[in-house]
Each structure stands twice: as structure tokens, then as C-alpha cells.
Length: 325
Ligand SMILES: Cc1cc2nc3c(=O)[nH]c(=O)nc-3n(C[C@H](O)[C@H](O)[C@H](O)COP(=O)(O)OP(=O)(O)OC[C@H]3O[C@@H](n4cnc5c(N)ncnc54)[C@H](O)[C@@H]3O)c2cc1C
Image (cartoon, rainbow, N blue to C red; front, side, top):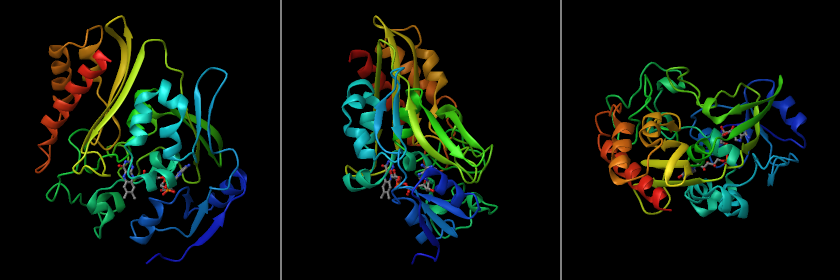
């Protein structure tokens, strides 16, 4: 059953920020994640502030510099079907199309997708784990099939978003409004590892709202993709995923990013894989070396060792495919 809380439907960003400033308040966008968390007592809220009626936070527009500005309230479905996204940011279109089910993509927003809470069954369940202020990560000795193999420390969640790795690969930033004004944060610096803070997943401070996601115009020669492997053919979170955004000079990789989903508590940039492909043609031996390099520092838990070969195969296949595209 849902606990009792005050519900405010803000009519402007200022009104939303005023209500969020008091503490104990939560942002409500599409509600697909928030309402489940409140119902299951994952966290509490005295006040839920809906931003769905705030003007200016919905839609996709190309700016004068050619960058794409996506309002935080734009649904994941609208991102997936936008003509410019499909033409210039293929990896993002693929990732958005892979999020959850059609119903959730039509209700869930891109801002909510980046800010959603982790899906760890201990965190979501009736366990007072580290992330909820307890003293134990139950995954360490428990059921760790869906947990991380990279970047874990004390807590071993994986970041649940499909859009985040694709956006990070494309060099996106988020615009944030809060009680102390506005700021822009590159996605590279937006997500927080458990070694920095075990109780939050982003740098958002209390009372702050993501207002827009900005994706720079891709330079000439950039190709991007996203592919995810899931346990079931229907909707599901990524067991393993890889987002690529690579700039080619002729048939060689000149620059680019390799970002993994389902691997780490944050969308995980594999600099090892990036170094292995830089300046090279994406021939099978290069792709294999890059995949091995990406997994060289993996530390599986008791039950998720399968992820290492799964990621290696996925990265190798995706690099080869993008090389041929
Ligand atoms: C059954 C199920 C399956 C799913 N499968 C996938 C999947 O395969 N891949 C995937 O990527 N996602 C998946 N999701 C997550 C889904 O995509 C997200 O729930 C959705 O995108 C969140 O958007 P929302 O607008 O509903 O967020 P809300 O539920 O409204 O909010 C989510 C969280 O973000 C905060 N928040 C929301 N918007 C903002 C903002 N603008 N600024 C600051 N904080 C904000 C809220 O306070 C809340 O904590 C799944 C969800 C469900 C329920």
C-alpha cells in the first residue's frame, strides 16, 4: 500500500523548486519508478512534487550549435522515435527503444530514466542494506546473478538505465536547476560510484531537478550503436550492454567511447577497450583484444562469473559490426 504523503502538481519550475527545497520531498515525473519505490518502502517522501505540468521541460530541439536539447519530461518513446535522434544519434535511438515495455516507454521520461533507483533485489526488497543506511551488502554472500563485475566497492548494484550509457558514449550533459541556481554537468561526472557515496547514484543535491539533456552534434565520421542482452526476449533490464560512439577517419578509429551497461554501479566507460581500438581498423583480432582489455579488471561475485565471457563476446561482436557499418 502507498504511504501517505502530500502531492503537489507544480505549474512552474520555480514553484517545483520551492516545494522541493524543504527536504523530505521527491520529484515525480512519469512515476513508473518512483511510485513502486514508495509503495515498497524503499525510501520515504513527505511530499511528492509532480513536474509533469511544468512548461518548457518537454520536447526535443536542435540548438544553434547543432546540439540536441531534450527536455527531461520527454518520454523515452518520443526519444526513440524522434527523426533527428534516429538519423544522427542511432545509439541513443536503439537504447531508448530497448527500455522496458511500450507502456513504460510512453509513461517514463528521459530525466526519470537517468535518475531511477537501482534494481538490486536486496535494495528493493525488505533488507536494510548499505544503500538504505544499513551495514551490509547482502549481494556479497547472497544471490548476485544480476550484480556488478566492475566498479563495485561495499555495494554491488548495476546502473539500470539503457539510455544513460548511450548518452554518455555520445558525450551528453545534463542541465540542472536547484535552490542554488543552475548548473550543467557532463554525464561523465553525473553518476556516483559506491566508493564515493554508497547511498546515492547521482551528484544531484536535495531539491535539484534535471531540466534538460544536451547531446552535442556528432562530428563527421561518428557512428554509434547500443546493444543489450537480457535474460528474457520481452522487456527486461540489461544483463550486459554496450554503447559505442566512434569517430572514424577512413576505416580507422580516430576517437570515441565504449560504455558498458549492466556491468557496474554507473554506466561504465571502458578506457581499456577505447585504447585498444584507437588508431586501428576494427578487424577481428583488434576487437577481440579490446573485449579482453575491457574485462581484464573484472571482479565477479559468487554467481555472476557468466557476465565476463558474455560482455567479452558482446563487445567484440558490436565493435566488428560498427566497423562494417
Ligand atoms: C517493470 C519495469 C521495467 C523497466 N525496464 C527498464 C529497462 O529495461 N531499461 C531502462 O533503462 N529502464 C527500465 N525501467 C525504468 C524506466 O525506464 C524508468 O522507470 C523510467 O524511465 C523512469 O522515468 P519516470 O519519468 O517514470 O521517473 P519517475 O518514476 O517519476 O522518477 C524516477 C526517479 O527519478 C527522480 N526523477 C525523475 N525525474 C527527475 C528529474 N527531472 N530530475 C531529478 N530527479 C528526477 C524521481 O524522484 C525518482 O527517484 C523499467 C521500469 C519498470 C517499472
